[in-house]
Image 1: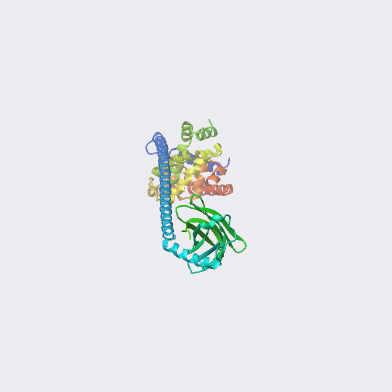
Image 2 (image 1 turned 60 degrees about the horizontal axis):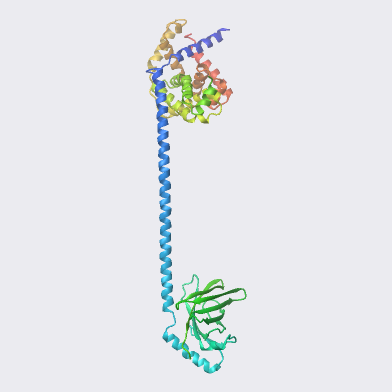
Amino acid sequence: MNTKDENRDAIEEIFKNVHEEIKPIDSWEALRARIDSRIDNKKLHSISCAQSIVFWRRLAFGMAACFLIMAGILVYLLGTHYGVRKYQRTQLVASNKLLNKVDLNRLSFAFSQVRQLFGQQSQWIMIGSGNSTQMSVAGEMSSEAEDRKLLAVRLAVNLDSYLLPQQYFDVVMFSNQQASFQLPLANISAIDISLKPVLRNDGIIEIEIIARSGISSEAKSVSSVVDNSFVSLVRIRANGKWVNIDGTGQSMPEI
Amino acid sequence: MDDILLVGASQAGDRIAFGSLTDRYYKSIYRFVFRYTGSHHDADEICQETFLRAFVNIRKLRDGDCFKAWIFMIATNLLRKRVKMFTHEKTLDLENQDSFVAKLAEDGNTEPFKTISAKEKAMIIHEQLQQMPERMRLVTILVLVEGLSQKDTAEILKCSESSVSRYLDMARKWLKGKLRNLI
């Protein structure tokens, strides 16, 4: 070993010896105890944190559940309220727009005028709220007795998403007749209607309707009118808009 | 029991095994930190924090054989963070050391290190280390004093082995130059 190596070893030896002399201010045992204490505190803190996390997580879940329940109740109440209001409004409109005695007299008078034109045939008449009037003779009649049952059918037509007033069309015809006419509607092309009301023996009016718009759109249904109220008959697509047709029927005095 | 078994047991939640690992290395960590900072307070605090972090993260250690390098890495990271954050309190009287070293050199004593006390030697060594650049100082303590391999030291300091080797050579030359009159 040369002098250079000896010097190097001497320096490193001194280094190591000096290093070994380093001690904490108090003692190694005290430092060791502090390390253990720090770790134990951390463990306790971790457990406490974990418990705290579980608590807050449960609380958050609980609150979220409560929130969802409250939101559900709110939506239900709003929906119910809206539904009730809509139903009430519809009922109100429907009851307001039912044919009253004056209307029935007016229609009866008009029909008697038409009867003078067509004689004893099975004629019908349609009078729209815009004073549009159509009349003709029904070709089909299932029984002779039906011509003694005169019915007035009021059709209420409205368009989805349009704040347009409903349009009404009154059709006077015998029970079990079939009348075909057009509904002249504002903003869209006319809709062809084939209507056949039947006054059943139990007094309920059954309305059979076929609605057509153009060559591709068609809807049909058979509905019973209960308690002189409007019922939804058909819903049809016309000119890119949805058209709802409701209807009600009332029997007219014999003429 | 070697480190691998103790680390495996610690990872399985054996607190006693981790205690054995702590017993094995806490003095080295304390000395290492003190040697670097010269502050007992910092050494105490960083030593505790090092073992706390080791305890918390022991499951992340893949190779139990690397525990020593790993624990020194934790200590080194804390040390660097601490040095950046605080101007730590020096417990050694550095002003007196300069005059002490100069006085020893002027005395004409051919081997003054053989005549002075351990405390005086410590003061001189500390003084020389404090004057070293940071990396060189860390390499000196980890390799020369703690006996870590150059590979482990490179891993701890996040540099190449050749860099560690270079720092080591520079440190030896530095110390030789500074202490040649004293040995």
